[in-house]
Image 1 (tube, helix red, strand yellow):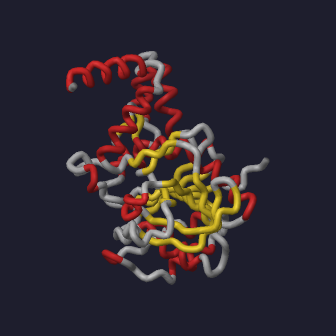
Image 2: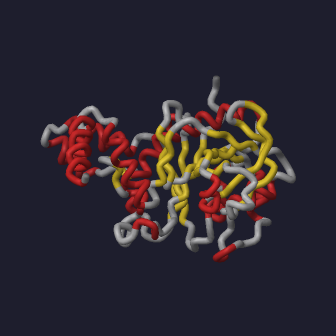
Image 3: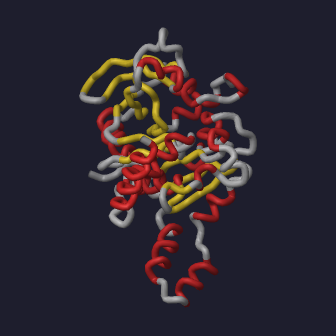
Length: 292
């Protein structure tokens, strides 16, 4: 089946306040999960889903992301001269993964505003939005799973996961009608509702497939709390024009934009590595016994 989703947007303009002080002088997206920056896992998910063009919506202090995905001529020359061909292939391969584009969000006005910056890049095509805070470990890339839903219904798709009812205040929550396994037709979206008033326990995760109609919705969306334009509000308005679907993806999600999720991701991905897994497992056992 021909892949119809070719473009993806990755907003990376946030300050990373949940990971201070580590993010005081470096982008949170560049903090390593084992030996790769967090944002690379998200880029690889996009590529493995068939994406050919990626737009980073950056902000002040995020130049390191652009440098990372560019060629490192001096480093490559050094590795080549020293015969370190394996490392040379790894370093060079990063810059050749896919076509990268960049636009700067000069004022941090929310996720909705960041997505609006992609209007010219999208050019009326369907596109994916992947938030770099969310790393999803799955056999089939999360975005690819969602694309199968998009191809069936030809309408926007939001990734969701089930959360304890007591935690709905931490997420955007969708309500909807279940129409097939793990797929819902969305009726409403509520941003961080009190558990007593949450319409469901289906929490929005940082993966979306949208079409160009979202830009008209964003243009007419009023700023909310903190003067930010929320993507959730725009999608809610979009329900008046077209159907929107929510999909419970298969896989494990790590919120690497906060300390607990960041540490869990490092442990989980280290345990999966053939060169590290056994030693890390042994160390966890030893330190756990010491703490007990």
